Amino acid sequence: DDLPNLKCFSLTIYDCLTDAYDSQILPLFRRLLNLEELCLCIAIKNRTTLIDGNHVSDEILIHMPRLRTFKFCISMNIRMNNLVHYLSKNDIQRSFINMKQHQQVDCIVNYRYGIGTYHVFSLPFMFDCLEYVGNKFPSIVFNHVIRLTVRDEVSFGHEFFHRIAWSFPFLKYLCVMNNKPQLSKLEKLNSNCKPSYSIVKYPYLISLRLDTAYVHYIDQFLNQTKTHLPSLTILRVRYESLRIATRNFRKSITRLNCSKVKELIFSPAIIDSPITKTKRSKKFNIYFPLLESCVCSLSYE
Image 1 (cartoon, rainbow, N blue to C red):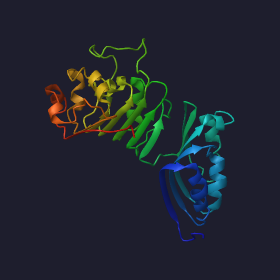
Image 2: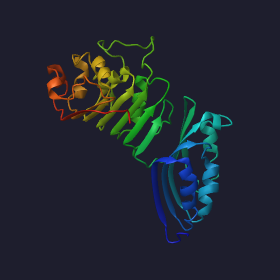
Image 3: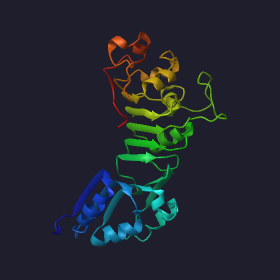
């Protein structure tokens, strides 16, 4: 049945299977004949075709003739072998030109390990979460985003994290997924030398996840000459990587950013990690003076 009395509708789904989108979400939109405002944030897994401006117009907006406001972020993963050709950012943006709302649209496109990741969204960006952003993303400010996951098969340099700090000024939760060494031989810097780069500042970041990142990124964030984390209270990391990056908890310049951590999560779980107070060395305790919880996770989930 139609829903003629519904004027405003907001839908957020961060893990939607493509079958559910086709069989449940689209039929729902067809019932919203008198809708005037739509806020849609959806991330679709295992998509075989791109949801572009043509799809949005023909499958969604055509059923909402009274729609005045449409705020959206549509994210999807598509295997390369399902695409006739790789679509560029301009290709996708052009498909939204004829939308009757005449709103500004931007997108983020990344190809990695045979999978294309697409984020298509209206501006200004109105949602609090964005996942799987790579080295290439637009130079705009995402004022509402507090949760972010960055992932790429190409390493992230120091300048990348400056761009993240500028584009996401109110970030509270950050996950870094990158198994490539951060610095090339030409860029490699000695952490004990006076830095020739400016410090990246994340004033509101409270949770940092690095258990799916190369050991270099632990130094990138914990090294006070590279990054300033005055609010960090939750750290998720591989114990061995943390031990290496801090030189077995003896390295002074990686101590300050750990000083306010209250919750430490080691992933994956290992036998020798200091989850109990009896296993913690004096230097470990100096590194984490405010630690309240130290646990092991059985997986990277």
